[in-house]
Image (cartoon, rainbow, N blue to C red; front, side):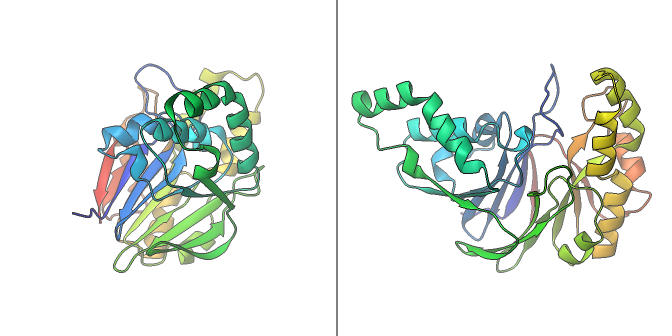
Length: 284
């Protein structure tokens, strides 16, 4: 039986974790018989298993940009899948630089990899990752069509939003981005928009807790991410059926609860709303 659903595997914005917090970004799309992982933040291997997904059953992996909370565990995921029996290549699409990451991971793990090749008779690991450069435009991914749009996530230039379309359903993933009017047309009429979100009232507390000593973190957040109310407005203007907030900033401050996210987003969006939590599955 084929599922048609999106599973939010990791929903935390940013790379740091603390006791009791959500895990960084990763998301699973199951549609038209395809199983596609989008981003591979810390904890993705465990999250896939917890979602009932064999690591050897992934059809493709898409990496939206090269911030560590989106690809830190890509190498360990592939290595772990390999030790679990992966023996066919996986198509991987990501920005320029992803090949360098993979080559460096293989070098760092060369003792273990070479040992397992000799001692356990495993297939070569390196060719199992078929890495392609992700660019704007349209591409086929098995039975799915993927539209790729560059989003606004300075200082990174190669950062992308994705629209994944099957025969009957469409899902749009904003990626990490500041509010974009182009997202309205990109997401027009989608069954589900998964949009990153920042809780405006929580930014002061977040910056105080991190304590970097200057205002660079605040400036990054304000120019590179989307307030929840703006995510709601984009969803409304795009006429999407449902909105899920993902890559939540902040999501580990006990002073800010789901009620705060609901309150800010409901200023602009009155449709079905999901405040992302790790392991949340949204049926299409």
